[in-house]
Length: 282
Image (cartoon, rainbow, N blue to C red; front, side, top):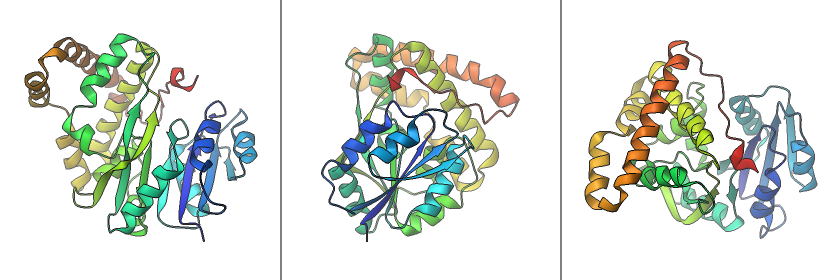
């Protein structure tokens, strides 16, 4: 039996899914992982590229990540279960480390982030220099592109209401004693290559938090409000690292503009328009 199932929802990810599968399977033993790629609403070669790497492929005409996760979950055969975004990179050893963390009693686990920033414009690098220092970002499982859950953890996230920000909802569904960021695992994250695409991501993130506040309810909503960045967080960063003052100005400007731009979608309760960053997929 496979030691873990890896579910990869993929909508028009033909340009990048190959690099993920190559990294994931490079050192894997035959049959070690049960890998399911769910090509949802694709009009490119995502499914063909995945099949060329010898993994199972489920296809659906519905371009919905939530539906893709559901179908992938139905097709998967093993626990722990690892959900991976198609545009990140995670290696064999990283998945093994996440799997082992869950067998030690955790309900959910995620890797450290390895952000590729060397060729990004300065405003993008400045934003992430602050974002990666925020307490909620350091401690939460969201924004990593990979979340692994035990069988009990899987049942909990499958009971969550459908929301656009599935990784944030999944992270907030587990208390600090139930989740872990595994230091021996890392996921390569490809941030936007342009400032405009950074803004698209941040508008989407603001919309996600607003949606959760309206539909999630209960403990998840409370946790979402507590996870929001406040002036105290930014002041703490400024005190610890005063050289980041220009970066803080960029972060604050991006945050305020993103909240202003998200108001229209929030007022219209438009929680289906996915502002996708294409620049990071080149």
